[in-house]
Length: 506
Image (cartoon, rainbow, N blue to C red; front, side, top):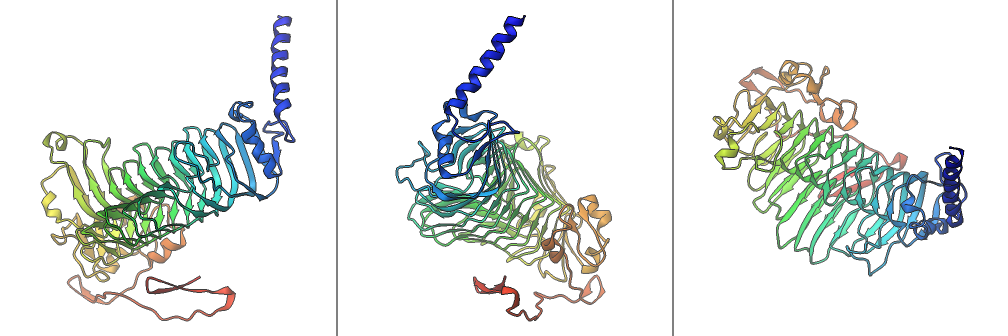
């Protein structure tokens, strides 16, 4: 027995002694005594020693200071360890012109199986693909901020990763994307392709601007939020603008195609796209769940497109695994589409397959509020009376303020119990609590706010009503718009901006 213990101990010592021969960092790589990174040379050694350290499985690194010298090469193919940034930044300068999708030279790591946390990325990158190709099931990207200046030259690129199966949490993007090449482009911010993992407590402040292209496929958080994907408590402040195009455009604010779940999210960014067939603040095509979300951004599409303040289209098809749901959502800004346009959902679609339609799966749109004018209808772009006898399409308790919005709820007008206008006093304070239930937050003197967003400053502003006189439910004053003059000085470094003919200030 003693001999066995001695042999095992000796083997353990030999392994760590051999790693010590390769390691040229301070520390021992443990959680208590991590390898310490001081310089860009220390970073380059991570790539050099990747094979010797088995992709750094369970090995810890700690960034001791900001790295102002530029890192030009990737840190490795696979990373299975822990990289703790401690709030410091690394300066990137990826610019290898031979980098392609097959060799992925201009990335931090190709595959992230481990954890990277508390890190900021600075610098200017070109011929850039993304920081990672794939975040694996157990991979975690925590508190990572991008301040990168990105000059895209490839036709596929994004900021963080091509695919996410793991966790992206508390990450912030401040990088803008501008693309003006005459080609089809596939781009995004957080995930360019499929999200089947979690995106939690993240913020996007970057804009996407695309001009002179043949076609575009883009969104902020993922192009496809898969049936296991979750986007939670996340905010988009960035605008998407597609200024030209000779082919069709596929884009949306949060995700283009949602078959997962989007919950407790806020969109303040504007979507302005030509030649797009469908668009919505949270999903162009929703085959999953969107709940307790707030949109304050403008959604505008042309090319006979369908537009919705929350989702462009809700569609039953043979690929869905659960009910399609839009619930407890609030839209407060303008929606424009040349085809079907609704403040909540642009179009309801069902597969014309009676075998499929007779099953238990349904489109459910309930307990939503829209407080803004659209170019067509307040809630639904469809004629909802077409679905009265369809058991698979359930529409309940969707409201708009008929004193503020002089439009009907749908192409077939208001339908009591499904989609209808109410007076301001019938919607504010606690008036709707018994109808909408516990998915909303109620308070005196304001509209309901989706539960979970009631402490957000944008939500509180959005829920502030304008009270207009009324005699009866059929005799009331209404307005098309409300303006208020006020003065803002130049103290405290106030800067005035002009965008799309509108003046704002920071």
